[in-house]
Length: 265
Image (cartoon, rainbow, N blue to C red; front, side):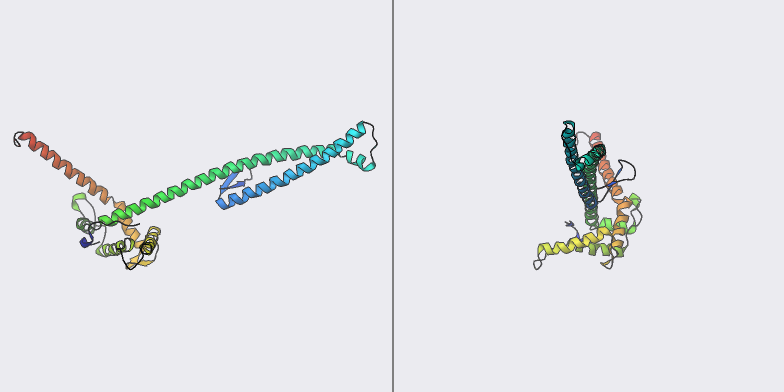
């Protein structure tokens, strides 16, 4: 990013688990939530089938009891079955209560799954926003590193804004090479998409801070250099200094006009 490169320097760039405590639900990954929701459906299917079978059995016993009450003659098998009437009734009531409990739990799990999915979506959006912010910061830094005055201040320190030396000549040279990699010049012999596919890979490796060789150093070292400049507050101080100079110039101009109001007549 030497002065010859000044100008336009734009970088292209829930799963629900039933806990040990009653009614407790914990959330995990999306794949687990789908699998466990399906498992709950299977459990509900088994319980529903059990309830239907018991209802049919009780229905037969009700029919036997009705015939007996009317004085009709029952065979021994029917009489033996009637001896279990109360047991079947109690089991059916228990199965229905269990069915209600599983239905309620299934609804809670569905709500938890939706809530977990929403939370994961928000986390992904937040992560993407942070990643985009980092890309924009990178673009800003690489653009400004093309200015001779900025390079000199970062290399030697700027007494006017009390900024210590932040980058060495070697680091600046490596960042110049990085800029060429993430923002390649148009090449008529190479497809546009192919050019930026390679550039995007360099950018991804830089964002991840990979300990991989590039530009005579590593992506990790380059990221550390850029972070050092970013976190130093140098550009915040430089901006404040520029604003102060502009305000001072405007004040001086106002004072001069106040001293000699007829000067421009």
